[in-house]
Length: 547
Image (cartoon, rainbow, N blue to C red):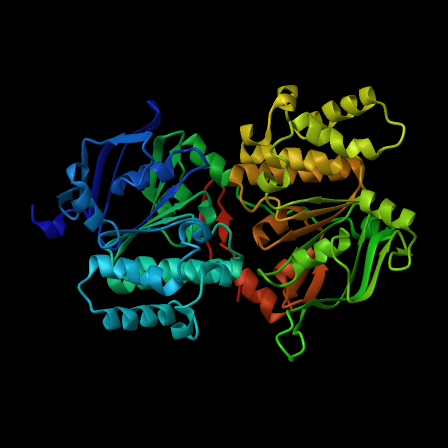
């Protein structure tokens, strides 16, 4: 067999163990040149460890074995460290999930990009600089020469991911491994980054392995899909065939977790309820630092926003990163002060309210943060975290507090054994349930849910969405659901508000906004949403978004 007919990558019976505990259990697969392979599974399925073993990018306590592991006709399983170092970057490049932690914060972007080129090419320093500038321009970054002297923290999340793609593409590898490359990005940047990465790989003739938990996203790009569950390869097929005729129960469960449209709200019932909060012409400004004799610059993060949210209603606030949606949430929660405009709680304006009225609002308004890992105190047990808000309830005995803690834990679907655990001993979905329990334990009138499902697996996302809907039906609180994920929006929202650059550009009932968007920005957001249409047999097929 000649080299041209051989697969670019061939793996047989790959096993990975952590401290002698098997986490990848004998998977086999191959990859052809220019092919795009998606590896899909929930957190802990072993997909990332399996792909990292291809270039032995594993911690010391993690070991792998394989009957066969060849790349470009070369057995990479038995390469020396120096030979394997030559394969990394020049042969197999890797785009990591979080560029902020994989880019060196102490080095300029220019130095970091030059490092890989100097290692894998014989180009002169000037030639490397020219190639770096051309690549930065190719990935859509303006004023590339000036960017070489900036540090990673000076870039937005989307810009950092573009820099990461540029660093991987500079040595022109034959295989790109992209590990959750768009998890933390909003839908517009996600679409741009994926399109950019795949267009660059197509130009260079590279193959791609996409690692993701988002089956709907990878279905738009991958030619073939592998599904992993608890270290085992349970199914693999061409993308269209796997979606249309899933064979394994786990694959069907992943497809069942895809977002589905919520039944239309009873508008008369919602409109009959009194507004819990009302914002009128809100402006929020940030002042920059004063430089010598120049006046401090002023940035308007929110400009003239007005809306109200009624009891029992869920309103989704949608927009790209930097649109001002989280800033509005912090204003409502009392964490920021508006430059102008008014905020009212139950019809009572808060700008001239007494300290007692403001305290009542702060207690009645609770926030579910995007990342429970950073919002839950790691030194406190779950019982302490849940009891803490109840300490503000006058006259509530310790026995009553403990009874309420056990009750709310049951309401969010967690067993009593979790009360004695710390946050790090819980999974991501379990921590988010604790965060929700902490928010509802005092029966608040208003809840702000800030990207509560963005970092969760699809099946866990569905569970959290269902939980929020059930709790709202039970307690009747109003909810502001802040997100960039339109798939999440259609599952839970009664109304949708769309923000762009601090301005509310569109607002309406969910079905009207999703099916008949009026603003160009809303249409752009919807055009980036992966479109999968259910079939009668439990499968799905891709459909083109409406123009």
